[in-house]
Length: 466
Image (cartoon, rainbow, N blue to C red; front, side, top):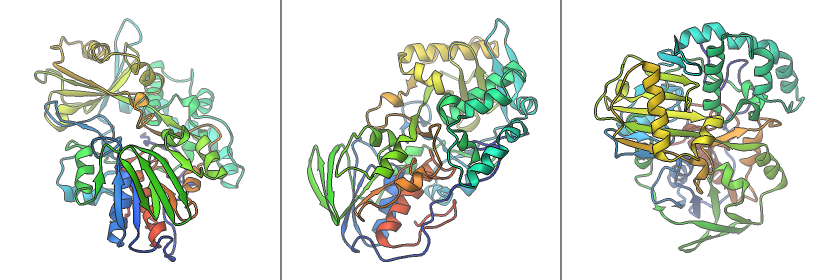
């Protein structure tokens, strides 16, 4: 029994990013379009618009390209502290460009995982395949979700229920304690929120079954973003404070002066949109604001530990540490890059606690848990990097999630052009299982470009414009 990253069940019921047949351009060809944000959404939009003949400029508040794709180069090998994987591997929309870039990647095997239970005085261990067999989550969830899924497909609207509600009914107390604890932790890391904060309808999105040959970008996701943006005009360290617009004209107010444009593609995170970090005059339409209210920002933080040498087993690709001081999923970097690095991923409530810890405390807790799980005495780490994406004023979290009450059409609502002048894009502006991913962000940027230029956006999930 295997499971998928975003879905376990019933196939996709949400629309993709295709915009149908070509139509007249919404913005006059050759006009200037400003893109706010140099993450994958902004890069995707700029590449397509430039090819279509528009004058483009990306305005980025950070001093680097990539947004929430952030590669740390100071460890023995590049380590991604933000986005790390191209999900679905060769079927990912960016797979061809990734190959073209020449960056190193490795294929993850999510069946090659050791699970450890550290809650009690004794350490329990089992392979992830045994957890799958004991939990049999697909069958358990199907029995709970068939009728809600059917009602949703027939237009019954959102249930207001959470995945946590389904979990309590179908799983809690009925399976081996370690398997239940480990699997729940895995889900909360994937969704980046406690299960009671994620809409039950998220389970209705389609997705491949694991192992799905996901590409772990050991060459660095930020390096990939730099490659994609190499010929684009990008203005770094430029904070956009206000966008004042009317049909066919926009004024972008920044800390480095004002920019005039015929249209704007706004690619900041859902968190920044929700808190109106950039003032929009006029504001978003009511339906867009309501869609934003049904979204939240999840939190997946990482801890990278570097060591003098590899002194632990390298036959397993991942370790799941359930319980203990700092529950985490550890990517075993030596398997991929040969570097003596462990990359811990935390989600849900654990990730929120991590925001309050110092780097030293977080590193020490993860190190002690790993030693205890393996029953080994390891040398102390000689370097550590810890993320706090919720505290990052330019992110407000790691990636979007759907709150109970979400209808799964939020991305399509937010993607509607506003007076043919303001266009939204980003990993949250997606209504399929590519939400939260760099490929989803890139595709949404290309959809915005297609809307501007009157192009036919690809309908297939693994297709892009350029």
